[in-house]
Length: 334
Image (tube, rainbow, N blue to C red; front, side, top):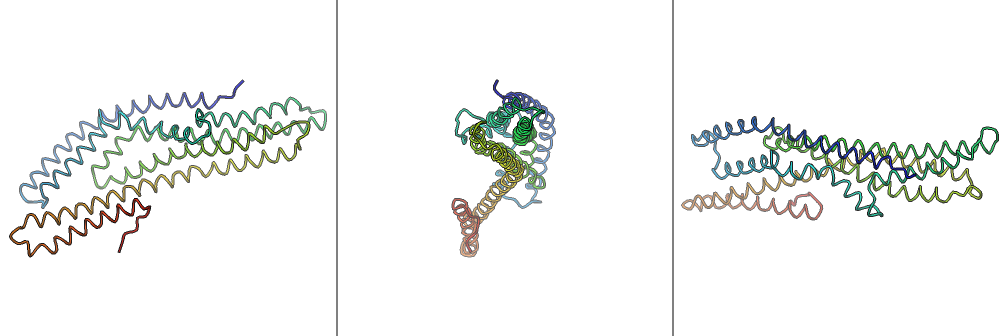
């Protein structure tokens, strides 16, 4: 009988989390939409009046640009937006698709890889247990082997399956509260919430991918070890020691996977947002410099030098960021 505990369990978890994410997103959007609509309407009216009265020194195009940005954010996050229709489901399913892509077996997923690793160890544990006996030295040796092989299989199943299950639950929770994190981009004090949310999403997704990839490698080693066991000719002591070593290494590696994935996820999200904000700042500086030249034709001689320098500085900043990003470095030119 095939060992398929995690395949069945993950299928149930995926179904339950899909319903959970859809329900929570629907309720969250229903609660946030009226509050956000009223708040943004009042904010636009008040801000517009302040600009008209001259209390705030902001060009009309900057106000229009800010309004467009707010419109895009709310369109993505709220009802009928891209997030609810596509992004939320992608957050849950893309890690499994990546895992399937990097495994040698194109039909394999993380759950099947873990089940296969457990199957190898449990088969050998069952064979050893059938040969065991408490009335002879050889029988006791087989009993010890059965315990060792069963323990090694259990360790692989618990560590590998447990990490993926935690990552799946975390991804579901993060996907459910995604609209709130995206709407945090509307306000400067809360933008860090989106940064941290993105880092957690990437970290949890990488955990699933890394565990699947590591199990793909360990399974080939563990499977060869178990398949090479011949009860009549194999050195049982060496074989048992190999199983213990592989299991210990697998446990140590898997314990580090979540921290490595979290570090990579946070670094990736912060790096991307840093570049986007830097490019946006450079573009704003370039636009202001160019506008100063265009809007002052009668005093062009007086303003052309500083305005041109401002525009050139902004364009150069954008160029340096773009070149550094595509070359793999964020170091600015002097």
